[in-house]
Length: 499
Image 1 (cartoon, one colour):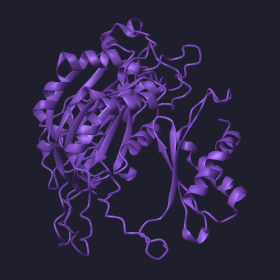
Image 2: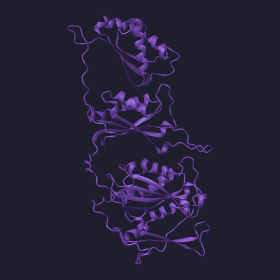
Image 3: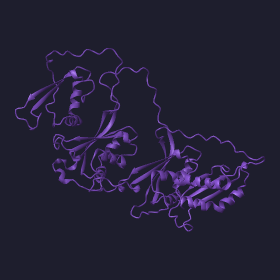
Image 4: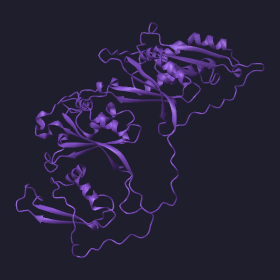
């Protein structure tokens, strides 16, 4: 299964020989195994020999068995066909030629504990401020900011390969007993030479050392052509021809996007303000959506990326990581330009000092806005096409000769001087509570169903705008409704909301 495609089981012969003086005192290690691969298919003997000489093949062989194995005396020659006679395989029946496995350029490197040359675990740095060594922690470092921008997570794989020197028949799972083979497939706009230069630099190795709690070293950074890994792995025999050719692939849609980063300005002087909203992906999306009313919320994408400077210390007593802190992350905001607001206006608004100051007042932690840029980006999956202009709602019933609908508009703000219990201000999640409170007041004063459902909109940092429509069929004037609201609505909402 590890040799090149289409060698075939019938073309491989394995013989077992007893050793007079075994080198390892373990069951199964008293034998040597002679492996002969006959050249009978379209795979040349030189290709089989080249595959067996590769370092990765030796890692795979060593990982497949409990005993530590190695390859020696690899030669290419001519020999007699063994008995019973096994003639060359007959040609397969005529069928469409099999599709060769896809090949891609890949950059490979090996990350090993720096003490693997004999220093042993005594040289390990047990620093609680760093991540424990594992394939996942190495992958997290590579995807944080170590690799050039444009290398995707799906293009990077990390495989932990046991080292036979330190493995006692796979009886230990210590992470320092493994080498970590990293494969970076070159699939985007970043050339392979740039990736090789990056992973070979001192900054890359130093950043890895600062991120992982084991002393590590980077070696064998090479560029080669490799088979695309699973899920696309063609079978060893030619597959059945497809009934119909697959349709041509459609390139991913591209759109203009305004991108910015939001993170905590400092962690030492953090303000714990009860009047602010806790920092999170949802709270930042709520602020941006409210600050840009002409942009639909579905056109705003917010993602939290862990920042290396905010990593929490590990609990040495329990071995479990402490709870994530909001300031451990950088919040990356993408605003897709799909409506009537031009890109230049979005850049001007998000780069303004008012945008950053109001965000800082809205969030409990002190935050700042940085790196506001314009990009052409792939539309995220699943595909979300640009929004179409909304259909116009049917006009409300109006009295003859009228062209407008009377409304009553007012703003709600928590008043701490008026009510001692008002320890917190309004937050965006209370929109439904405010709306239900106004509906209940309308029912008590004007009767059920006389006035419709009011429009309630959150205004950062801590207010609500309320618009009540006074339809002609209610036989009420907007002035009468406004006076009724001024007379008792504030007391009603204060009692129901606790503000």
